[in-house]
Length: 131
Image (cartoon, rainbow, N blue to C red):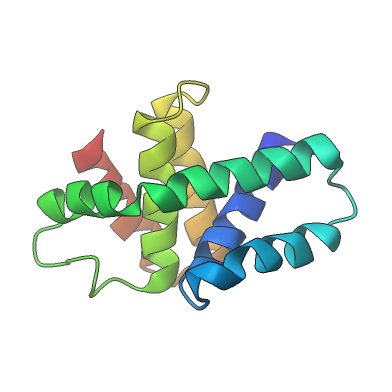
């Protein structure tokens, strides 16, 4: 799989975290990854590992987002926008394999695909403050 496709899978699973109990997530990961025909074992393991790593750091990630998002706490953001921002923040600050500009660019692309009309600008603005 291409990196953008992997990132999109990570986004979808992180988004899924918003609607399921923590105990259900390993099964949700398995079900999701079993239905991605392009993903081999290596890609599936990478996706699952990345989602788990991000999920364990959500409290710290949200704290940083709340520090810069004046008037928009993580509780008020749409789940889609919040998930994209969380993923981008992780890639920008905790994943040494992803250049910061690539993380921002890919976050805006995800926002165009999955967010509202205002999502790309909103996400770009938050990420600019986190850059």
